[in-house]
Image 1 (cartoon, rainbow, N blue to C red):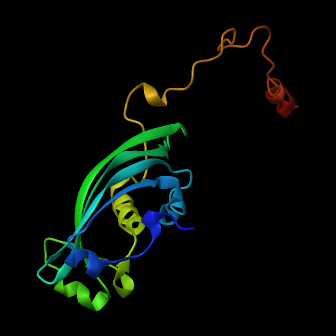
Image 2 (image 1 turned 180 degrees about the vertical axis):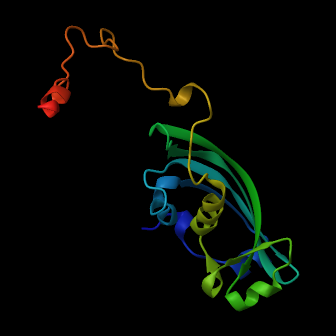
Length: 170
């Protein structure tokens, strides 16, 4: 059974009724993000308000939450705060995109239907960093060595190529 946020919704009916839809979406379950962000975790929640402006269905979405990404420097988890608002004009075909007011970004809703997951995925693709990194500071320092482990090995150091120069001169 599909999650409520993944079901396609009729945008004309929602826009005409000026509907509000609250959502909470686990990021690991967004199929559109799994392929480009393996290991993505976290949760976002928010609200989508549908309305109609100059004959175009509009979705105004506010979204907050935390995405868990993998730092590309230290390969450890990185929390990325999400706090965004976006307004998009929903169109049924690419031919209708020209009718979207200039202040809105057009978004394709084939057949006049779209799921909340598609709106969330589109916004996250634009707002998540392409190369996630911890900020400068302690987060990316190597983990401390376990007690008793020293930086230099004790005893004699074995150097297998130490006599190589002598052998080559022969």
